[in-house]
Length: 256
Image (cartoon, rainbow, N blue to C red; front, top):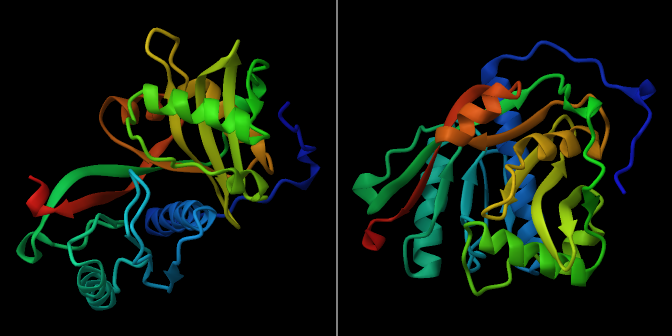
């Protein structure tokens, strides 16, 4: 079951601007991308300006995510290199909504908000029926449920190598021979990210339970971060998160 670490070692919160929080959100998301790609044994690189990979990305993942709102020249140069290398325009995550890529043959897929919860209080009610995914068989069942919940693909997205990463935890709500809900929690130096939250159709929403799990997955008291949009964003705000910045997802205009 979920590890409940003592709270005696809580980090002291310091005042951060929304701009700094957005950078930490983007960096945590890049940590997640790096873990996913390396679990697939795919090459990647990271600079102060961006994270990128010129390999074919797993479904629902981009080939580049930006890390600095001011490093536009470096990011555009890398986008050009990726386009040449892959022979097509790839998916991109503009972490600060600073790139205008329409003239370069991309189209905007969607916009979203980075979200931040400074002192999560959901840990007071830990869902006892959730547990950490520990082996390949459980991970396979978890991914099947994730796909059924609204992320259809025939490709394998989450490989067993992720289970050995000390900064990556995958949690789910088992029910018989399946999972009914789940999420991924990943740790960076200063924040903890929560993503891939899902629940099967016809089962109760899982946002509150996923946040409860994420709040105590690593060091209790670290800020929780992620990104969302639409109704899901409204629900996360209702659970104590706030928007600290905007991001955009760009894809090839040829996919329109």
